[in-house]
Length: 195
Image (cartoon, rainbow, N blue to C red):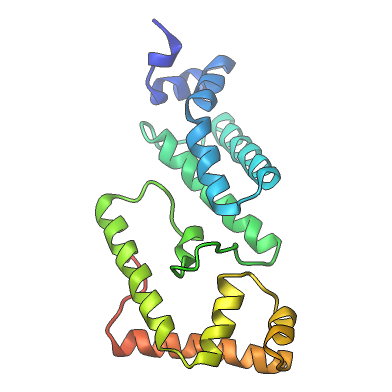
């Protein structure tokens, strides 16, 4: 029987019972999907490598300590670990992720993963569209600051220089933009989460 035909759950069990090759097989089997997922969020090869390695360190520690209890759901479990480490990475670097696609307010890129079911994917796409529409309803000076901060990952100092206003004014406009977005969402009965 070839190892590549063995189910994930069996390989996990084999690894827990001392078969180091079983983990190697699991990593090889899922590397591309997990690596691509991480890279799609952080858009940096070095950070992706670090998070990928940290993901499997956590996997190994959890398996070695007999704390794994999601038999048959290995890949979604590893993807959740990777997802949480991506969020931790953003928190540590004290920045939001870059948004290169200015066509949509893609805040969900750090909150979701590729294992969304079809229904949630449709809901998420609708939320993207709704937020994009709401952003267009903001006063121009608020919309401008929000787009620079979120879509272009500009600092408030850069926004201040670009718009020729003080940093405090830029911060105030961002604050009001977020308050107004929430207000507009409530007025239009738009729910901005998947729950």
